[in-house]
Length: 431
Image (cartoon, rainbow, N blue to C red; front, side, top):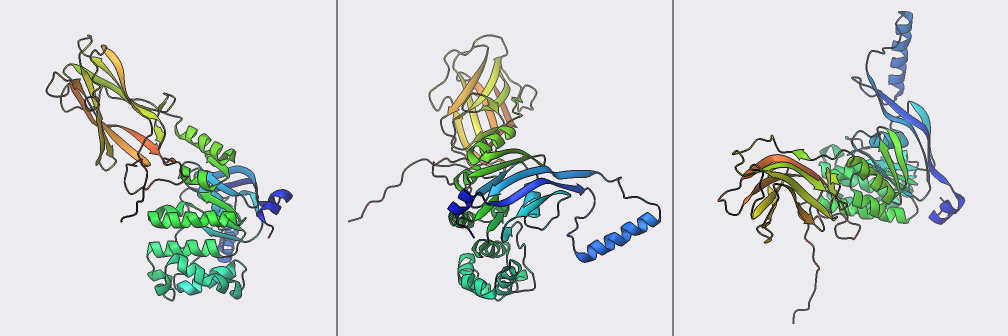
């Protein structure tokens, strides 16, 4: 296998996709292309023609991929981005040989290992040890080659006490650890990884991502599907954006991420609060709309972790007159309803001494400290002279947070809690 520098210098191509398309018929089971299925399908088709029946065209079809064309040089790390249903997993299944394309072709140079689903390539009745050697054999490796990496695989997976146990008794985590260890440690030229890593815990994800970085540094080609933008930017050099089964962009990873986020944020819109259900009728001031804004002041449905943004609310005075000492409060909640933060003008000493009859109040956030996910917003609007808010709206407004590089280290923040703390660590020797 050429080194990374040789591959780039010689322009060797690891993966070439030409007009790659995949069509599925809705309401039918996917076929895996076995000889038995091919023969039985041929018999049914021949029988239908004898009976004067053509192929069944009544069922709706959908193109998971349509005319996908790209080249990936050897030694590159390709990040595949796109919304759910864009065709990312279908592309990896075709490249790994699991699925045949409907049209077009995919040429892959060298040995390919993949981790697309938990337990992919494992035989449930065989032990962990037997499955490791079986996978190596399928990849064309000799028993000696697999044996040379065996201890390293088992150590990485942490399944030594269970290595001679049939894998049907493994937990999902054990399956995932061993599957990734096999895919990453066996001596293949190309590694395909779907976002199956998302089912693991945080420690496992970090361990696997570290190994992917190591694999990439060895000059091997990696294709990685993920929704974690910070991970893709830190790990990959090239990005492929899929939308509706087609190539929307292919180029530098940072530009690919920007293109993808632009499509995610393409349909922002303020939430209309004027007719939202309320605990009590507005008395003096009424909330009209809520929305989030990006660093440029543009309304958006999604904000990125670590970036500047604003939460905004439009209001009106029911009497049509300016009001004194108006305050606004936002309560942020997780999708499960747990409170994350409460911010209001009163706490910051920023009550507005004279507010117009109609206006917009914004809470400006220099660096959004929330992890990825959807957050609900409860709003309270009123005057300090009043005992209770003039208007309050619960459970109607929300916004999405997209993962970003909050700490500037190329690593995602922990997803075990919604809030990220900014600070610095210091170590001192204790006398």
